[in-house]
Length: 48
Image 1 (spheres, one colour):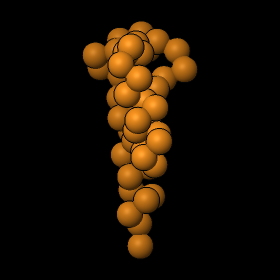
Image 2 (cartoon, one colour):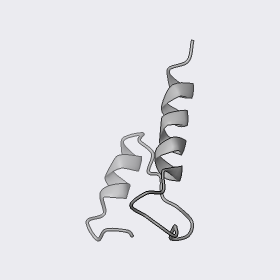
Image 3 (cartoon, one colour):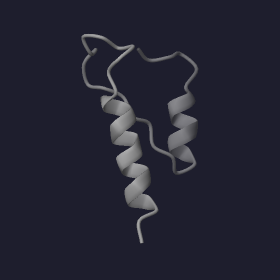
Image 4 (cartoon, helix red, strand yellow):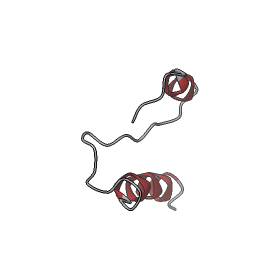
């Protein structure tokens, strides 16, 4: 679900990254795919 606040543009304009699933997960409350992807990006950014 995308919001209507144009927050993504502000995040991306300042060098951030927005993670959004290509399709709606079967159980959005329990699906951790985007969370996992974000953690992997953070880990690679701060890796030695």
